Figure 1: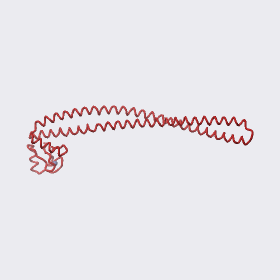
Figure 2: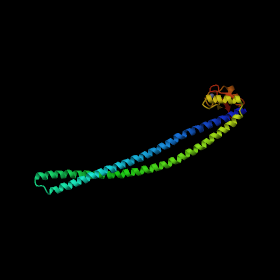
Figure 3: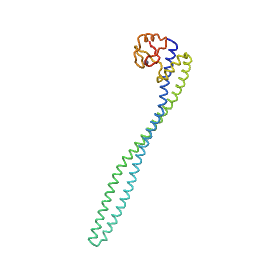
Length: 234
Ligand SMILES: [Zn+2]
């Protein structure tokens, strides 16, 4: 095989690998952001659960106060019953007693409902706390994985840069210029395989003579359609 062609194939492999590493490095910040986002959502779920429980307790305190007021009114009215002198007064006080008894019953029912709800809300808080804790562990672990992967990729990137320089130094300048030109024009892909009579990149059928020449791998032959340098793999 023509040595320039061999080196250009190598150069293409390095560039393709480098591009993949770059893309992977670029994706890391959004991956980290997404981890933080999920963690924030877990925190928000816990805060909402805690707030709902606090509200329940606050409402219960209010209702308990209402109950105490209604109970003391009820006792007061019951005491007054002993002092009534007329049927009209008795009737009026009995009406007050009935109203106070309704208030007491209503408050007691409400308290019972709030207590039942508080049990569920307390479990919801506990679940949210456990979920947040698990999410914190996961975030920490996956963040560490991302960070160490980034370091590893940056090392690989540097190694590729060094290897590329070495390979570049072995290529004849016109061949290198052709490679760089095509690579720049064609999304970083300058060298592709010719397979079964086709350019493997653009799938255009090569003329039989071109394909026969290609099989020798002793010249830089470009695809008529996409201009990329072709090679033949035995
Ligand atoms: Zn092509």
